[in-house]
Length: 281
Image (cartoon, one colour):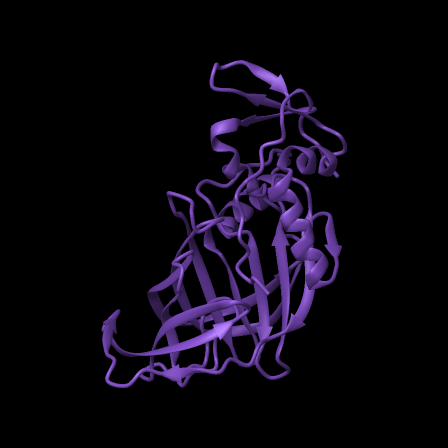
């Protein structure tokens, strides 16, 4: 793994931002389908329901004949910049702005499978795993109505992986898709959130398109099971200093305290990040 610096500086008061992965090259990719439709969602989420502030990401949902892809537009933007810089001979990396959700998924409703990649913080690798897409049991809420982006929507609820979700879908767009693993309704999901309000998606744009759905291979990908991926992600949130140091070949982690002084992370108590996974069970 390439390592830019031997000392990684993390501000203690902003350690949650350290979960953002560095930009990656998009040189190694292949077309897996062609998108006919593109939906853009604004995602507001928290690492834990008790967090005061939300983080935000812009998500792209590409819908093709056989596959769909859900990924962060922010990460894709910075990856594209890094790719162009690399072609010009630059070896610099950038830490994307904002708080993009570092998960992307390419799913197929035909064989009910999902190929998922979770990009770990800074330059500590990417988890790659495959699992079956859920068959969600939706309950339709009678006499419910809401207009989103000019489309008449109906409410439906479901339970998945330990959370209860409320969704708004429109039959004016008869596409059985939505962000993440949500789908199976008689129309595109334009808004969905869990009962705790930890994760909130709302569609901000929809258009017809003809765009390749790309599957990229990132640096230091690690194939694993969904269970091992969940354990690895939880380990980062529990011990971020230790995780980052070991993941970057033993790089020394310096932490700046409220007094403005930097200290070696090994000399202070490990600071965990409150975390409740999207899929609880």
